[in-house]
Amino acid sequence: MNHFFLLFLLLWTTTDAQMTRRLEGYNIDRNQISVAGLSSGAAFAHQMHVIHSATFIGAGIFAGMPYNCAENHDQFDCGLNPENINIQGLIEDTLRFASEGNIDPVSNLRGSKIFLLHGTEDFVVNIGSTRHIQRYYENFGSQVASEYGLQVGHAHPTLNYGWECSEGFTLPPNINNCSYDGAFHIFNSIYDNIVNHNGSVGLNGQFFEFDQSEFKTSEDDSLDDVGYMYVPSGCVERSTACKLHIYFHGCANGRIFLDDEIARNSGFNELAELNNIIVMYPQNEGQLIACWDTNGYEGDGLGWQTKDGIQVQAIKRMVDRVTRIQT
Image (cartoon, rainbow, N blue to C red):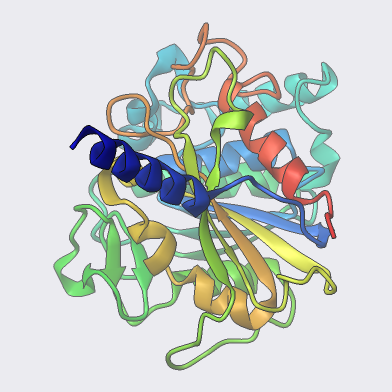
């Protein structure tokens, strides 16, 4: 019995290790890297874009909060009470961070392509928060497209997956079936000549788990050990220069709650397959319900809105790895 148990354990751990890969490098056009997210993930995507604007050419932000708005470490107040946000003060903070070299030069934001969405049935984040984001980006000369009229709750809208859109559900997985392709509108706003689809797409590429633990530091107790990635069939062999997109899940939507549901069903992979876009889905598990650090809860609570942020550094290391070609 003991020998049988040991053999079973060995086989189980070997299979699990084979499922989770070491993150590899691909043939990435470094001028074609973008970010997006929902809610906390949207706020973090916005944060990553501003901090590393030399790396990311654009962002898709669904029901997010403005960069650096979480004064007194209260990110929820940013979403619920946008009237308390001093957007001009946030702009001035951004300029100061850039002048000190703590974020990339704000000149990179000029011409950046942004897609904002806020549902009419979203009662978790106030639409005023998203409008603040629009004013913020327009101040720096970004190209902003927006959708504020869709009858959707606090959720990512898709063509055919999730809670019914008309019911405006905000429950996990925070995906609503709206006959509206949120993923397409993000890609189409950021990239040129995006090929769309009207039905099912064969996902002939590779969807897999990758090891996030090597990108963590001793101070990082929130990043999950596992992330997800979809590599389109046209990008697997690395002969074609592909785009890269990073999508951040919302609170209570990480792997520890939903496994890979968000990564498989947000609508990005089908479009990625048709357009040679590698999609990375980093996973967070901290702050009770897996919210991303947009208020300084990690480490000493300082530097989260700069290149010194613990999670910011981890994600940037992942991006640097993926964009380092290996053949």
